[in-house]
Length: 199
Image (cartoon, rainbow, N blue to C red):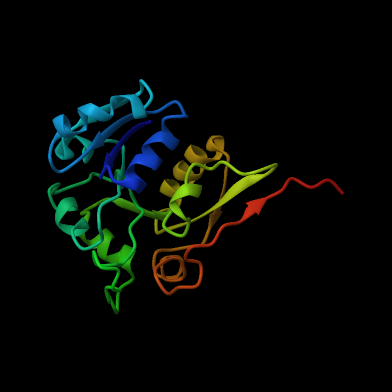
């Protein structure tokens, strides 16, 4: 799959490295331009290229990994996502870690409203960043909660992450699933591993 990653901080970097283990082509972008990433070439596999934010936003699947406060404006750079998938990995914090109140909407509903005609998936934000690789210390697969309003988009997302050692768990729509995954929702900063048991 062609994946655009918007944001090259800790989360954007780890998710770029994670998805590059699959049969994907990835454009990693930063607001300062592709050239600002050139010195980091050795951090990424050959199927990762550096591009502009505008290019990353045009890929089949877009991972939005910028601070929540600026994410809507970044997404509005595209007027019509034409049913492409946008994966929201943000958390509702300011730069000094104060919670951003989005009521009556969930954070992902705010993201979905900004990404016109996109199919938005909420995922990864409940995991500590060091566990976003899918790797586990021992047997089993890393549980990955996700939510979204489009069934086909969720199927596509689940199929994409399963080969990366994730056990995707569908929490339903953005309204309910997003509410339990976002800051203060109960599943934040949790880490579970599914073991394959024989009876």
